[in-house]
Length: 544
Image 1 (spheres, rainbow, N blue to C red):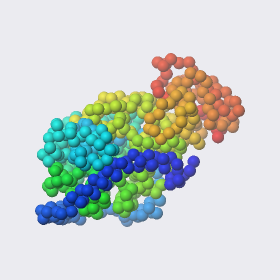
Image 2 (cartoon, rainbow, N blue to C red):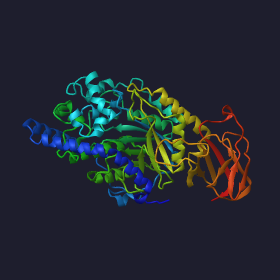
Image 3 (cartoon, rainbow, N blue to C red):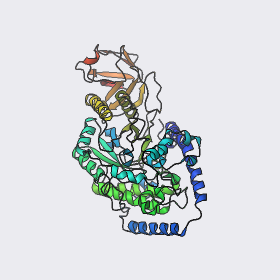
Image 4 (tube, one colour):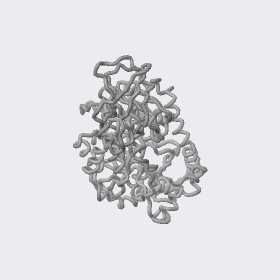
């Protein structure tokens, strides 16, 4: 196992897979932005004055904002950040809940990037990737049901986002029942609407929409119920003016709304320095006011203009955590933003195909969308449980996304799957929580890939360890003798035994040529302690 991510083939494959998938997207954005820049090189006096006023007002606000704490152990450079250590609580947790909930939950169609697509006319879609994408139907849908985007823009969904059934206590109770150990609500999505109380923007969930501090309420309940609390920021994935399209035809071009939509960037290919400064101020405010245990950053931070930002916010967050005497905090990043070991890599909708060090995380949604959509296609509980097992066996953690409706109700399909995971973990949690990987993640006929969902069989086995105990997890109920090829048995103690978790009798086994052969009991499905995957607990053996 190679420990340098820079040369790790799985990392390279994952990054290439992600980057390859967005190349058409990024090329189209760049072309669109370049044409837009050519079309707007001549600005009216009113436009120039509006931009000056916006910058002056924002600069005044930023001058009064809290500054990063760089006076502690960590300095704003990657060399200093190498002192960071991944906290034990995080490596032990293995399973968290991600929550995509916001303004995009109101239209409830074409995913959480509705605000991006609703402003794109056919002439803005300058590649086949755009034209053929299913979300290209967003603008026609919007025009049909809500009207022109200069009259009814993204901001006009905010009064419709009422969250009348949102109950943080009930939500967190459900998350705890699912077996999750940490909870990460989206604090600021790409749309730049804040789901928390802020002095830096009037466009937040306390002033508008629900008129509640969503992040604050969730934090209080998460901590009260004994879980860890995180937040996510997606603001920096604002490529080349890509989120809101400034073409002179939409409400985003009205200066009175620029404190939500922002003004057009001076260079469409690079975020304004003032935008980066505002991003820093928002991140510092979020850290200071909500003291999260984990801070998740979306893609975009890899760009050169954000290097100082990334170093500074990490130093600030780590220094604050030490001042608060927290038992370690976590930054999740994508696409090589941070040197390995200075934060924790997160793979979106992808996973490792082998054991990887250091500890890593992947985030995935229960369905094809991240935000609530009326057109859901859910993964099964079995698929989600198998994915969790596979990830844990490779030294990772699963951050599973849910997508509540705009009214605050978590769809029953999502609740059912969370509860099914919880039922499985109540029986088998000792093989997941607090474990560490075996020398190899597992074995079986199904080739391990980076795909989030794979079809496993009873002959597919995943291994985890805890101290001298080895856990072997079969991905279905075996109908024949289970042969384990990877664990090499060197010796055993007098009280060595193999048990099936949830079954109260030791199992019969034999050792041949240092390999284990185990007989499962003859049980009907209704007699088994769980469904989907079954755990052998192997104790008292010297295994290599």
